[in-house]
Length: 147
Image: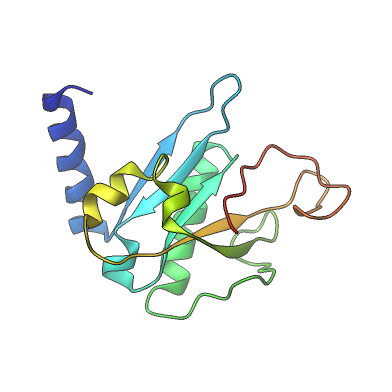
């Protein structure tokens, strides 16, 4: 990305964080590449971990991040337990991710936070038949980064 484009992009990111508390980044699907999205600014402004989502379309990813921020800001986020009402389409759960697993993905967040402490969670969702990763029948292209 050229310097002028980078400057415009990061101005938009910082403006969104200032105006809305966070910014969502989405990276589109390509052949052989799973799409993903993530938040930047939620940790700083709402005192909860940032959120990473892999394998869902842009609009749904943004809705889930927005719902997460609104529901859990300044509260404890439940980990490793199914949540049935973050969205009306399917249950989800959150798992912790080590930041070093996101260095290639959440570039905007690493630039924003620089040397500050921040954490990430990954939102895990079921396949089209309602099975979650780790269940034998699970069949979906969701990149799982948790350890």
